[in-house]
Image (cartoon, rainbow, N blue to C red; front, top):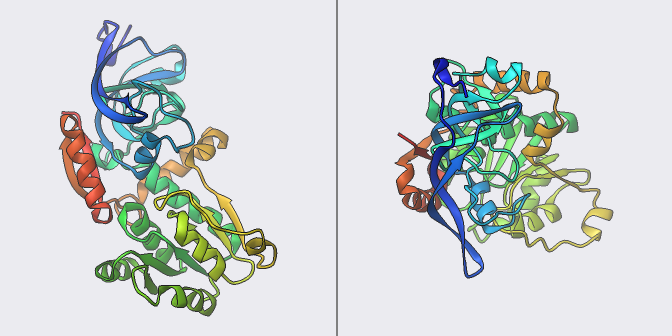
Length: 342
């Protein structure tokens, strides 16, 4: 098969990474080697340079994501690299040699590896100004933040509550909301996180560990007439928020860091007028036109160094992925943890 710069690539190519192994009913990561066959029609082979660790990766490995893990499957929902081979079709050949951000095909091997075959629809050419490390965090958080605020615009809200205001996406939502002119009300876990969230643009910050949190939440929500909640927590905090909102507010649930246990009654929605809807990035990717996707990604990339910037807390080589995940779990609010393949 013809590869980058006209080189003939010999398949199968050996892909090295970390796959899921079932140990007593729970999946753990273990080093794997898999042969890669040539990419099919409208598919490309990406030589990966970097990948990011996201909350969704951990949710997926626990088996509570939008599709189920399989034995031997390589996780990793986001990365960046260089397209070194392509399948049949004119469009894939136009991308040969391009630097791209990328995601895997649904239910197929991901970015915690040296290579990945994916659909042409799952790659985004990187602007020259962006590094591979920035590209590895381009799709999941920046795109989600931008699309969430497109939904916010349609709901004509003025004040927004963010339930997970720390970490890469929470900081991004706060910063972007402030730049778009919204009043941002933010929830954090600990008092020492307040100053950083205010610096990002929050007008009010509520601390979940504060004994006054349960009393203060409805007071603040009603004082600012909070119209939309961007909720990445799920679980207990979502239950409290729904009960604290003014009539007619909308909760957009995009994550479940606190778990999936919502203790809500039908009356919490019937009589309050509060609405709840889900947001999953994959649904946008499936339904958007190619023109809309291209336009949206261009806009997002232009903002990656500003409102949609992703702070990087640490970088680890792929071989140290277990340390990288532990680092991420211990420092979620500090920034992104990046895996590098070279």
